[in-house]
Image (cartoon, rainbow, N blue to C red):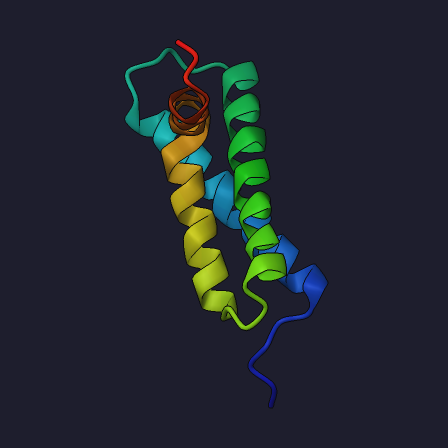
Length: 93
């Protein structure tokens, strides 16, 4: 039995991790819930999680569990953290 996932299974796992983390963050926040906000947050978090899969291009031997863990971390940090990091690195306010 093989332990590694196919590309499709890995992408699906990353999307699911992102969706769950995004919805969990929304449910834990004090923001007023709406379908639009829930779907938007879930999609952004899923996109960030899938983007973590790009690490395989830079670190080819990285385990799938590490990629999924990094996907969860990037979904937790969210777009605000990444935006602040980009502004900090570029020197713009």
